[in-house]
Length: 457
Image 1 (cartoon, rainbow, N blue to C red):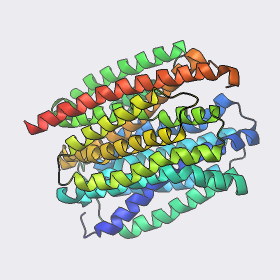
Image 2 (image 1 turned 180 degrees about the horizontal axis):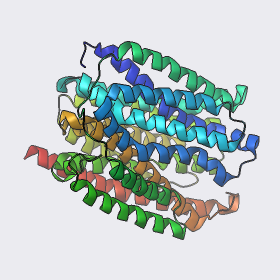
Image 3 (image 1 turned 30 degrees about the vertical axis):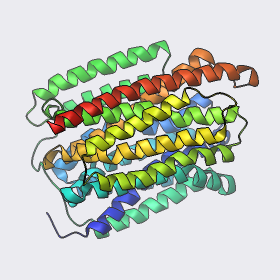
């Protein structure tokens, strides 16, 4: 069913949906201490409020993207947005930590349904010559959400308690659901009548769960067992999917489409080399003696530049080689990461801000063009799988990046409180983290430049 659709109205709805998920992801961090006090939760148990959501979102994106191809992307998108909104609203009423985590799992399911369809719908609505601009706007909104999330989350939590954060986000989601019904009137069904691959979905879920859980537990010895199990499951998944006529994910788009494969790899490496930066820098600024408000003001600089630059980069990717723009972005990120390896306790704040600006420019220049390359490198029937792949690369990269940061801290600081006596050891952890991030980014830049050569050939 294809009806006339107002592209701008649809873009607004998709952007609102894109705003909600990262907003909650960044805002909830400010509410965690108060939640912990309410339910007397340990730090490890408290981390499952975020981890349960992250893992659920990651493992269900690809299966829901495939289901959307069969039954309709609009149906799955609106169902996911509704589930996310109601579950988020329900978090505010949770009488116990177990029920709160359960609601977060359902929020993750809803987010997976949205992630697996949002970019696919956007790509279906806009023609190729306008796609980069639309993706740039959507990406800019994501970074805006990341920028305002901590401030809004902190304000709501401080003045009205942590449940108010879930009430506001949940009600905003419900309003977006109404708008989706009004303005998303077309349906996109690319694989109507085909069968859903339950076995492949199960193997995929086991593999991705093992990988993300293993990364999040680094450097505990059992984490390597989880990671090995995840890798083994993915090998089995690839072999199984190659034999299926109607797989949950067509793995041949990686082997037969080098542009898609290299772009997805670049995204994975980019998130793996950058997602742990905010965590390490927040601890660094704490060690420097900055309170939460001032530290947040410094760190928000990066997100603001990401938001503005990604908007411009999206437009540029419609006119210039997007692979080249993305590679340039990774190069700028690499310069910033190298600069962070020289941080000391007495590094001037203006130097830190300059480095954060470089990261913001680089990441903004990378994200929109890279997304444009990924979505433009596949046939229309694979838009859903490409959209889900981007989300999976992001979440897996985030988990790996945090695993690197936690491993570096464990090697030097271990599980001790960051007292002044441990500050030199913390700085060693920070330097190790940023050195690894820089090396990864260099590898990602090479992968990105290699695909650029392929395009030019």
